[in-house]
Image 1: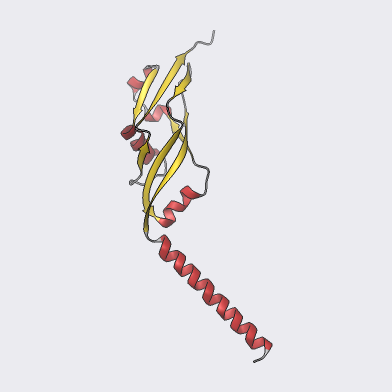
Image 2 (image 1 turned 180 degrees about the vertical axis):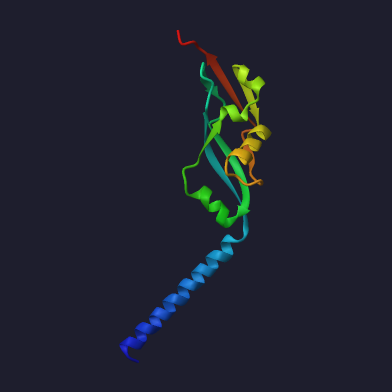
Length: 138
């Protein structure tokens, strides 16, 4: 066997190996998986004349059930969620200086506003309490 024939065989072996790896990856990523992620929580769009003085939880544990390829986007970026205060709260809650956002209220927001699948479920916390201090620009 000449050197040229051996090189051709090695190239063919390498191509077959790469095809098998790609096929294996495609099969693994097409299955459904359930994964729990921990996200840092940050509230944005807070009221202008109020200062956030207390937030009961700064992390949120969320379980997502989706295909493997869909879960990859949660593996790569930094795990932080910015929650729009004005969008997640009701008008009545926005008037108060002390509010509690329930798990279902946060879960609905995450599915609607963020890029989470319908199967996303918040594990902890069961609620997030925010306390504000009113101040004036005098």
